[in-house]
Amino acid sequence: MNDAIKHLGQQSELPDSPDEAILDAVPNPHPDTPYVTRFTAPEFTSICPVTGQPDFARLIIDYVPARHIVESKSLKLFLSSFRNHGAFHEDCTLLIAKRIVDAIEPEWLRIGGYWYPRGGIPIDVFYQTGEPPAGVWLPDPNVETYRGR
Image 1 (cartoon, one colour):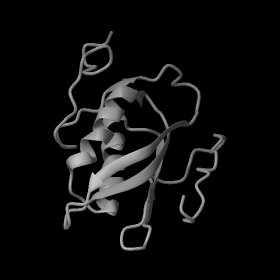
Image 2 (image 1 turned 90 degrees about the vertical axis):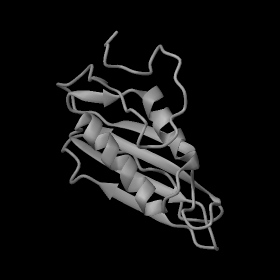
Image 3 (image 1 turned 135 degrees about the vertical axis):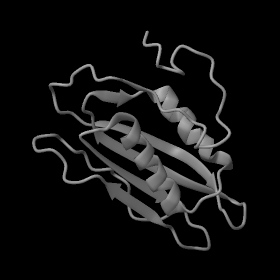
Image 4 (image 1 turned 90 degrees about the horizontal axis):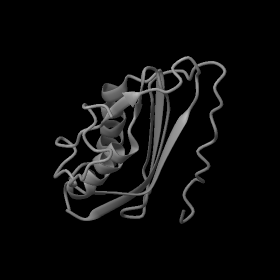
């Protein structure tokens, strides 16, 4: 086991904030093969920074790893740390993308934040680091435009 891994195989407490969360990077088992990894978080929550009310989203994170992959338990803890974090939808979505990019330096990453309505308006936030690598299969996120998702 890699000594740098903080969560896998360990008892881990939920970080108090995204700033305190640690994303573990582990060696990519197939660095010579371009492929896409997808994480879907269907019950992501954060807090509205103005009202303190909960916000809910479905996040879809796709990335093509380079030398490292994200260890999934650390990602789960990182995403869960937003439950008491006050931030706008755009800030949460981009913060998650940038932290993953900083942690593993993927060849490519995209995130879709499909936020449930507050005040009658759903806000969807999309980001990607550039053009996807040629030859990788990118499945559709398969999230319909808002109709009560």
